[in-house]
Image 1 (cartoon, one colour):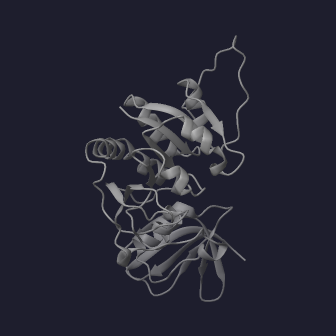
Image 2: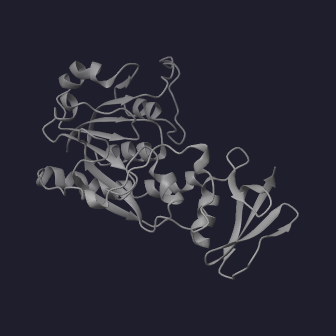
Image 3: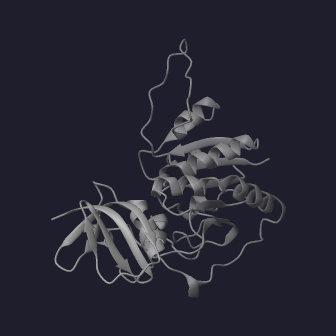
Length: 288
């Protein structure tokens, strides 16, 4: 078993990672999180956690010390050093770890990234995998280096992402692969800690956080990929922009796709069916 410091925020990926570590009897020395701290419950009223919705709740349930970050991580170096961890594990954490921290444990520091690195580096890889029609999804467990998402790869896990998922459902699907990813990765770190693969920079890609203009359809995408992008991100609050011949349509829900070729868009009440490179898509919309 390893003595591990866990650093992250309350997402399905990070929650699944921490749950997996607990289930395999790893020793979690402390949780560092940027989540808003929860008030302490009175001792006379024990806390009953349902679905372990936050890292803080999960930590409290298992008596793991929880440190809420309210300043840069480097300011916590003395605290981290005093824990004498074998390994630091991060997941869904936006701060860059300085070398003074990620080189501290004997096994260093590793991160769970929701893409098959070196492709789709950056803070929102799930969005860009949908936007850029990714064919092969997965997770990477990699060493933390000076630059985000560039460290040597320890192990990767491929994932099957079904059609028609919301982005939140996609993340839950990815999370299901984390227990196996960590089982393989931690076993390798313990047995052969120097074994890892350098990322191939010729295949690397990095994307920034999406902007409003990125919520626009790319007409060269296939019907399947376009449909999945709409399903993943189109809502009444974040509609996907589609440019018709005479006006813009704001898509709020994907309905279906097929490979029947049509030459122009058709409208039936609040549903538009429009052509793609290899078929057609139907989606619910409103227009300006």
